[in-house]
Length: 304
Image 1 (tube, rainbow, N blue to C red):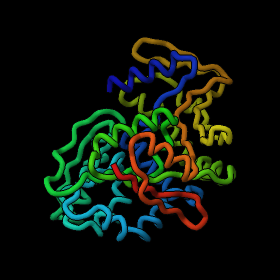
Image 2: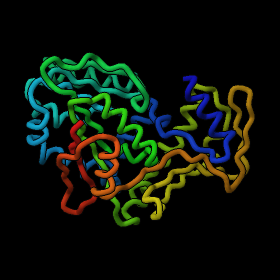
Image 3: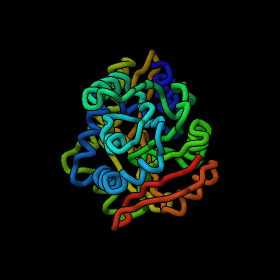
Image 4: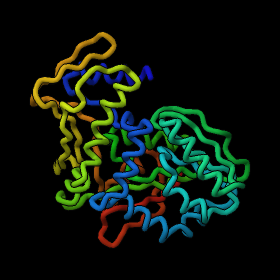
């Protein structure tokens, strides 16, 4: 977990106090995110699932026979099941996720449902260079990146990440979920649910650091704070200290005062046109896209 420690030191010492949201996702954080996906306020999951069900046959036809399906940030492997059910002669399924125990447990459950399926899990930070199994000899690599996780990257980071995927999927394609710009009230409700699950998910970053890095702090001394910035088209999530908070990590002592925060996540929203422009800049060719009737969410098929 050295990278987590280094990134947390940098976040606590730096002027912006910002850290990657990937550190939400230990086993507890992954389980909390699954709960978020079931909340009535959290529209992205059910809207994307409806699109995947409606167009699964089209996706399978575009994949073609003998494909290797790679899911980035695989998590609980819920959405990919809709693709696996319709895929033709799939060569293999490669789920990639940073949370090893959570990923392997999900793969075991999926294997019981699909005994013939060749599942090749990769425990890695998919946002960086990582080693994948060999590509299929007679099919294409097809990337699957659902959930609008691309929104967690700022635009420059998103461009670099898409370039990485473009190189990795060379000759194949990417199916990606993208949340769309909409009424800020809907966005506010989605990230500030009445049951407080998103708050617990946000605070889990500190609890994760307490468990694996020995961080000394009062996690209950922080409040969840999320808001929509219409100028940047993004949700921001922060942990706000209630009074002066002292944190100690590996012998280093840090202080967060009232008015400061630990910035834990951004979630950028796009128009169809702005995301397609970003994909083209990364070297993809947008081939098709699908939206729900309210135009809250979109799926994009990008040829690599």
